Length: 597
Image (cartoon, rainbow, N blue to C red):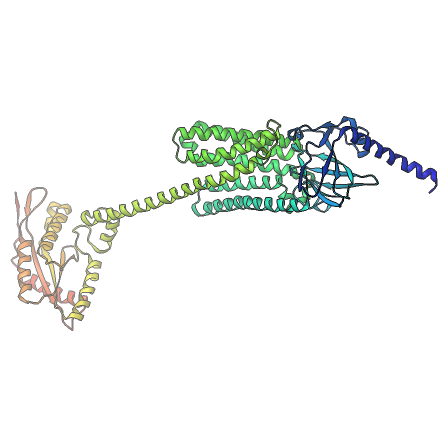
């Protein structure tokens, strides 16, 4: 290369170097650093400049006088701006030994950050930011971090070019690698704990929804999902680990997540506080606001990113204020669980409000406003988990109480059925084993008790007797007085038989006007004759009908005793039936009469 060509290429770089040196000397104070101190804030040692047009470093160097000195850390909080921001600072390694430092921007939600390191002989260019692919970042980290190396006694000038669709909070610092990685490990621990709590709470409530079918748990799970999606992206962890491919659209995911979370938070509040029941006006207002949230969610997908983020801040702040006022009102109205809701939700909503107001440059940038939504949500998760646990215990208690009431009611009904033969459960029992007219055993019930009695007789060799009773001259009562009178007569006969039966004996209505007595433990044969005589007297006694008329029926009796040959119910019934008909044929002069009371 000839001397003319070399000079032509060298002069522009020389000019840039001189301009950089002169402007730095006139506008910047040099920050002297040494490895003995592991942390330096670069905020107040820097100058800044906003430009609405894209510029190269060469263009910026020609506008060095346009930079303004930073007088406080809050001066680097610029909120939403359409313009790019340039920062510059000068560093001097006061140590004779070479050292490596890490330049770290505290705010992780910056799309593009380019760091230029100007030296006497050459310059370095490094890139980072949430919209920059991981492979192209100076350091694969959730924040914009740049390693720089300084020789012993070397002085360098740093120029940082920041482009961001979101709020610009450009606080940055200089740290030794050991201090940086120690702080990074500590921050990662707390972030892992924080997101672990979010994930655990979301999954816990989702499982409660599947188990209890209570929608309030589903709404909180969806709220937790939307909030986690947004905060993962905002903190840079989601971009670093999951969706770095989104590039320039990364910021849009924050707007979508927080707007969706606002909608689900409103739905959760309505369900948790039962506003439809206790506060209908608030319920309608929250329903209207939730519709606005859905419209805002659609707008967050379609609008330019910065407008979507601004809308997100408005929706988030409005949701914070609206739900807090609603919770206070419900607490004043003594709505169940409202106080726990206010205690838990107000802390989270306060953090969300601080987050939104900081984004809109209403509040200054500091640790509380930068991490307010995370601090508030962490405390809120702990408190609201108690509220949801209390709700779960209340639902469980209500379910157990309902079950206990049901069991008590069933027991009461069962007792009433046994006494009155009126309720449904006992009615089924009566249908299965008892005659509905007389209350005595029916055929099925007789078979059931006879089988047990015969089994006991076979094992204990206790005598067993079966007495069959058939009413005489019963049909004329039905014909003259009607079936209701006949039913009344049958009921009275059944009562008389039950009165004559011993404890442990079984009475049954075997047919229309046939009755059976099953007697166990018949040790004395003359006892059967005595019972048959009393049955005849009792049944033959006049019966007064409801109409006042007196009627009288007779009875034919057949008796069967158990033996080895007739040890089944069928044999006992057959023998008793034969004797009963024999007795009926002998009683040709059976008296039957009517009368009036």
